[in-house]
Image 1: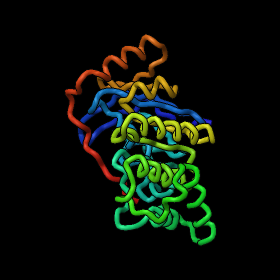
Image 2: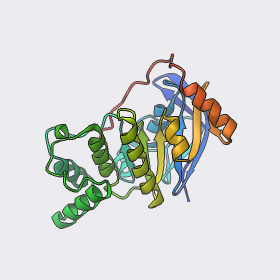
Image 3: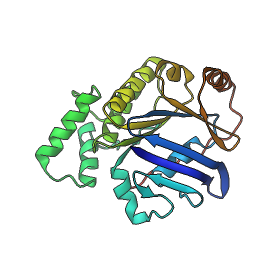
Length: 249
């Protein structure tokens, strides 16, 4: 089943065109990578999937929503159906892991305390953090915090998970573990879209691969193209970093 369907979509960051004529689709249960140099539009494209950036040109559907016609009042409804994983975690630092997860469940309509406790226990176990619920985020390592962010993202059993550089601030071994975890979640039925510069992870954990370059989104379909992407990824970036935007519910 198709969860994302983009045809000839133009993506803007403020008034600047960053991607042109984007044609992209994502089926249920797929693992998809977005790669490319810094500033080529990867994060901007991801933001259009959850309505942080508007789509005004082309045809765009996400989880059944027409993104061109999407009203601001519909954003919470859309975002309940997807999970978002940020590179900088965005955990609430003034409360425990358990309280972070409880806050999200209550904000998305959960009311039964027994069901809330059970779901928190389930997701912490899924990400290997079942003994960390009482901890504050500052007491956790970067890899542990990212596992909590993944737990937060899967609380509502989303069909679509969007991960913006989820391994970018982690060491190589921890990054590998996080990617393995995301692949397990994908195998359980969720579609996972990951922005990454780490081509070693792509080689170890295959998926569909798309590259942003020259204002275009191109699917990389063969080994020769993947080798070219890997070579370019090792070159120093010359472009400006895309500005980060925080999601507000």
